[in-house]
Length: 172
Image (cartoon, rainbow, N blue to C red; front, side, top):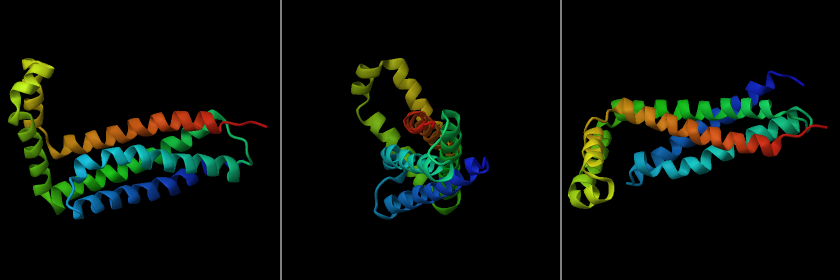
């Protein structure tokens, strides 16, 4: 059992998954969709797929069918962390350098949604929560958006890794 495979295998899948996440973002952007909001549901598909295949390759092809839970968690962690880092870094670069107007339009659209039917929102979530949410939206920065994207990918990745590592855990 070569322990360096615990990092080599997820490195390959993490970098691949990061570039796929970037490609999905660009596809949404050039198709006219909102790539900031519309990419989130795709994270629930993308991350588990890459985590699944990285853990499967490690167990089946590198460790001969034997893998402990901690090994699966390590592989999954490296994989989803790389995907999240690459994706969030690209998002920050894109919103700061390539198309800063995208960030501004995304922010304005979300504020417009909240203010267009403010009475309905106040009824549903309360006046204090509405004011807090509106202030939060107005205070959104590129960094906070990038941090949010990164943390959500890490959370999704952690949940997927926990489940997949349990499923693939096998000892001889």
